[in-house]
Length: 496
Image 1 (cartoon, rainbow, N blue to C red):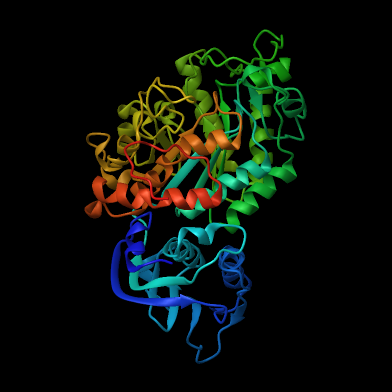
Image 2 (cartoon, rainbow, N blue to C red; image 1 turned 90 degrees about the vertical axis):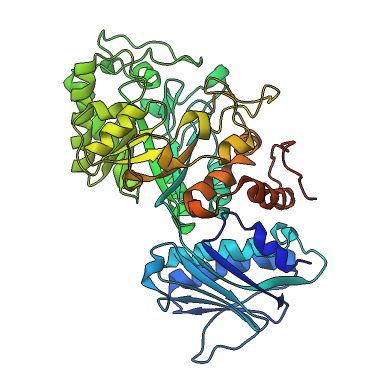
């Protein structure tokens, strides 16, 4: 099983790769040695062992490295590598005698583990013992990401997805070295997180979804569980509480958030732009303060996303004032505000981040003010857009996005006049108007998501569509082994 050519199928493409032409054999004599044997590094070793042992058919132990670590094993080593690798970089050296993975920080070890997984045959991803020998090509890889922010957004508001579904998506993101999960927790159709100070938001506002299904919501323990699980995969969760628009579920839950004092009925359609918090009321600011405080206390990362998009029912002057008020609330909780590009109308603090999705001018304006920008141009990176006119799921308002369209672009050239230094990274949103199951999510994300991961991670100099689609073709067998429901795009010569 396996050959040196399998090294060419790594996604994202490593910064530098030299293949030697020999093999390391993963046998039942192999263990994983970690140095130093801290809890964190040991857990990374256990993660790797847990990915390899079931399909290999033998137990791989995780041991503390001795002064002279033995050959014929896998070695995970922290703090002896070049600090220039940064938080997520790694050096992987495979000889016939040993596998050595070195990193400056634990996240780098974890990213390197994904490379090791991808260097093994696809059947290593199966959950039961598989026949055959397990070999790794001998090589040297030095690797670190181009962009700090390599994310995906999952809309759990239009349709609700379980904790297990979200964890499944987290694992798939981790496999391609992505490091951010943006959860769109609230919208017109549903409020998906319990707020203790305003319990009816979840109890009533979370009780339905697009099309009128039962909806659902996460308890605070559920949300904390998701955040901790993501953290164990070195993925940061960014919660989004959309405001002042996209708030119908909140208005239906509390009449005091409306301007006329009347709570509207719950909404299960898909139109946008019609709802708005009553931004001038003290009650609204108290609501914002309570929600942000509770979400901030549950969120390990430094960001809270406040939406801010398509607030068509809010006067522009009131909108700007409201965004600045919310920004102050977020900053008071020790977090930084992220919002969709419309928030660039407001006076932003240096740590606030703008997410570009449609109009380049706000993103350019934000960059000129010194704010960082996340690139999510809808016509390139919205995962809910159909592949073509025959796609059974998804929408097409931003156009069709086939696999080549998804891959063949550069974030630094999307907005004229905006320097690459202003770009924090990229994020692939997946809106769920038409998606009801984890299988639906996978179908729209794959095979496009790995391309976005590569755009965020790999150097632009090595970007080549023809070479990429050959590497991508080999991942179909991996997704089959993982039971991922993916779109078998005709443009890719999928390997079985």
